[in-house]
Length: 280
Image 1 (cartoon, rainbow, N blue to C red):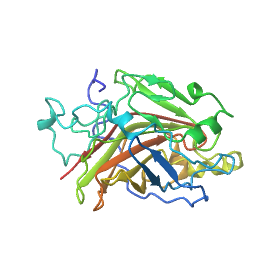
Image 2 (image 1 turned 120 degrees about the vertical axis):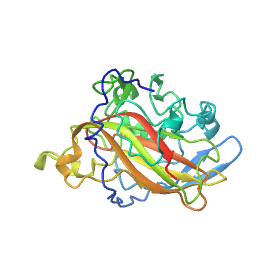
Image 3 (image 1 turned 90 degrees about the horizontal axis):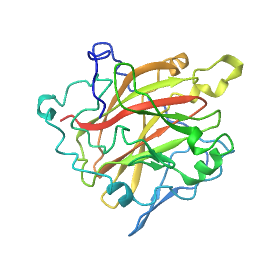
Image 4 (image 1 turned 90 degrees about the vertical axis):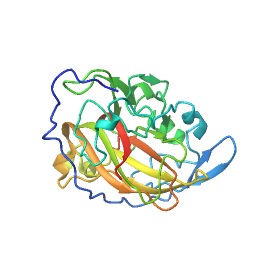
């Protein structure tokens, strides 16, 4: 968790973006398959944000859910300040995730291990290989300095001008999600070189999508496809460090949540302090 070294950055001015996510059309790719040590489950992934240039994805790069579970510590305990934070408070702290964060390793202090941050997985092996046309994994994913006034590390996902390059994901612990309960997703984010520039980048209109969520049921079957709110103007696809936040209600059969980060197209997406927490 990043520690504050100056007064709260933008605590009164951080933006709570209005929910307005617009689904992108499907491109006919086959469902992903989660490879788990004990079972296989289908993942009907929305691929409206892919291009024909990327080969169809036939398997999820996550080695198995237990690989991420191994990195999960007791996230329910939080820290000593957890009981001092109201769960209904709009989170505006750029330097820290909420202490009640259900997502293990939502900060990136441990850096990057091979192709993903510690405790995270590459979202798609096939897409990863396709992304090598525009750069190596080390060029698409880097550890960077934090937001101003913060310490520690953030990460940068750099599409390098290629569609859906790069994407990583992480899951919450088993039975961490309660159906019907309201949850808030937050992250400290910055976006660069993603705003449309007329005829130079007509497809930059899709660059608003940087953070997605899917639910898992009790059998680890994935469903749903939630995206971060879409800015009202395409010119707002570029922005400095801010807190991105929106709320969702868990469906009836949800038991866990998967959050994924993506450099959708075509520039850089910087992120830290990714969080999902219960509000009621």
